[in-house]
Every structure is written in C-alpha cells, then in structure tokens.
Length: 115
Length: 109
Image (tube, rainbow over all chains, first blue to last red; front, side, top):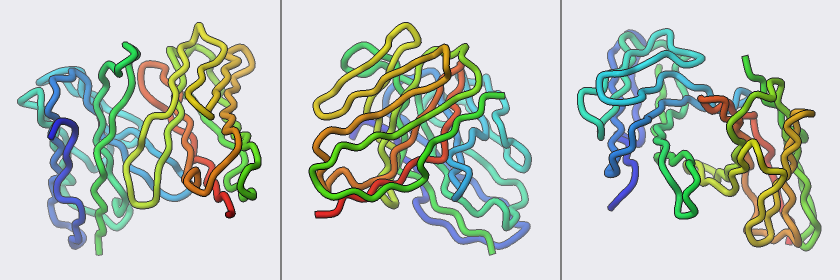
C-alpha cells in the first residue's frame, strides 16, 4: 500500500536502552519529519530532512539521532532512552495533494513507553 | 519562534449545532496554514490547507478562514454530527509546521 508506515507501532523499553523507530514512505517525497506528541504540548518537531543525507534539528532534538541514507527511510534513534521520552512519535512527509497543493502526510504513529 | 494557540481546548455541542474553532499564531510570515483532524489513537488527517494569499478555503461542511495580518484562523463546521467528534489541530507552515495543542470536540447525539 502506498503511504507512510511506522514500526513498531508500540514499544516498551527501559531507561538507558537504545531504541530505533522506523519510518518508511512509498512515495519519493523529498521532505520527511519526526514529531512527538504529548498532552498539553501538541506536536513538536524533533528532526526533519530535506533529502537523503540532509537532516536538520527541529524544536526538541536533544536525545535523538536521525539518519537518511535512502529517500524512502528516515529512522529516529533514542540513544539512551529517558522517561521524558515517553510519547507518541509521528513521522510525516510533504507532498502534493490531488488539488496540487502541498500538504503533510502523517504515519499512524509509534507509542513509546520508557520505564 | 512561532507560537500557535487554539481556543477552546475542548468543546461539547449537541448534534446539528455549528462548530467554531479558533487558532492564533504569533508570526504572520507564513506560507500556509493547515487544519488537521486526529481521532483517538490515530494519526493526523489533513482537512483544509489555506495558502497565505488566500482568505478562506471550503470543503463540504468545513470552511476555514485566514487573517494573516491579525494572526488568526477559524475553522467552521456546519451542522455538526457525532462523527465529527475528534481533536482538531491547527498547524502554521513557516517552512516548518508549528502545531497548536488542539481542540477536542464532542458532538452529542
């Protein structure tokens, strides 16, 4: 199916462990984004990428690492997970909708619990 | 830094009533503004996108207005239905998307 997939959909880990969240798109959209969603904060941008091998920090990048060796994949790594990183993580791309307007498409999210 | 605020945080209305959701932003230098819908435990679905040069955008029962100079957008949902119950998010695009915290809408049958 076309679109954005995220894996895993649910993850429980412990403080200090490394965790990688995967994001895959079946289009060839240039831009990809990682957001986290927390109660009271809405969605906040963690990192984004304008193309393969080009990444940049968003609003809340500390504790996260990204890479983008291929256009279709944009993994997000928590190098040493902390309880404050318990959140729902969304991956998104920017592409053209049917009416020709640029819009963002979101994946289904990954629910991460850090114990 | 762009700040996006949505008021009210929650709204409960009887079926058939019109809904008015507000979004305000601090920096008017934007490319566009987008309204999303999020159902519990789900991702975001784009509802309407208004370019910075536009004043409003309509899709079915939904109408969104944009007043860039005052930093405001309003989403109107006509004749609400229980299926409209969801959280509605406003996002401002000034090269990157900045989101409001959302308005959670409950439409009572």
